[in-house]
Image (tube, rainbow, N blue to C red):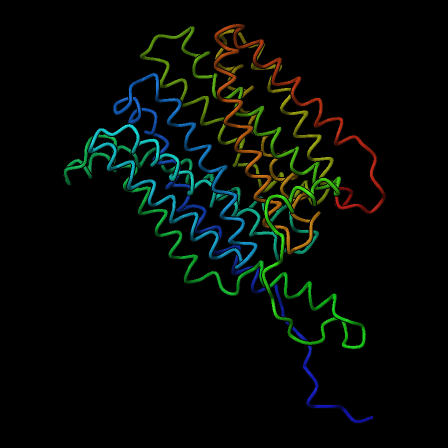
Length: 440
């Protein structure tokens, strides 16, 4: 039988090299972006206290968290329409503008400009969060957890290295005429601009658009074959937050993924935010900063350093199992930290467990969410998740201070533990065999 040489040729795209290149690129930019976020935030409260007063310092930090959550909406709209690359570039660009505005606010001693700058500075965090989803657009199902966790793990390098750069950045920029504590934010702006520039030039082909093209080709009519002809990738209609919410309402696995990410973040922020205050109740000022540094370093190590192992377990044991394991670690952390009294080593163990629990819910929940929805609405659903997570963290930070003042640290940890009950109930609900959250 003769072959029609004029017929459209099949799409034969080997995604493995594209995925390897994407992961290497994300790993690099995640380090750069992580340095940008942490180097600014490491002095953010001090700078805010100098510009706006001590009472406003915490609010200025929370503004950055809210900014990251709110920016998830426009960033994911851009991704839904045009792909991951422009969305990440816009997020990093907004973060760079925020860094510049904070520097200008410090120079002008302007409180409104400081809060606007911190709001925009959240763009760097939004970009770092969205990068983890970019890692799984083309990942094989059996490796999604590991590849997502690899990008999360890259944040460790930036988070650990950045505080050591803060003093150097501050010292270097004072000679340029910048006010004290403004230099780290100038370096943050440069880091965000560099990360965005690298992605703009090198994140090609776009992983999300490639995933959509493959999905559309696979769904082509049978007479043309499963990978018949190149398919034009158009922006999906109705891929905003409202559409995302409709998708999540109808997909139990997606609901569980969002709940795991948001609740793990809420518990982590609520306990972590008040731990320095707890240390300050029993130690002199000269010792508090040193102890806070040690305890929070262990906490950060728990959050990020073991994420490759958490990703491997997510693929090996299943998403739901690791989510429940993460909740178990969060409960253990609340029990250990809440009963530690003023015993700093035990409190340190509690914060380490808190970080590990957060890692479990974040990695497994993000993986489950990403694979539970179609590629055309995936960015919007992921943006909805980051919005809910950010608002949950900001709310937890605000409420934790009130609970700490009224009832104390042990009650705070007890309430944080109780908050996990709805997540446990959701995770234990039976699902049909073969559903995404049953995959290992």
